[in-house]
Picture 1: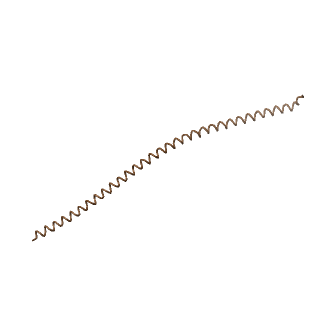
Picture 2: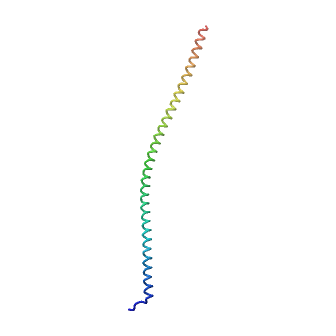
Picture 3: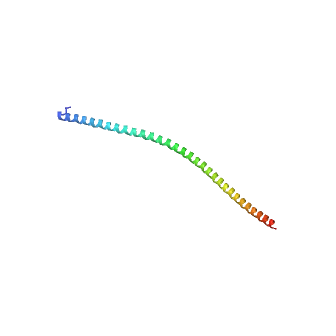
Length: 117
């Protein structure tokens, strides 16, 4: 076999070096992109876990708030009922007072007519 001419051998060597340099560059870029993607994936996974934990805590706090709200509503309804009862008692007391005033006036009128005779 005949050896290639010196210019052809030099061109082949340069081509091989260029090919090796491009391959190394591509591997380096690929490793960099791969590393960045792995970092992002790890961050997304950690954030997803944190969000899930926060969602559970939010659901728990929302349930507690709903329970507290129901208790306050029950207390409010009881207070409203008591106020209505107080109003009813006040109304009852005012009616009794009016009746007593009528009786008092009636007794006075009877006493006044009885004395005048």
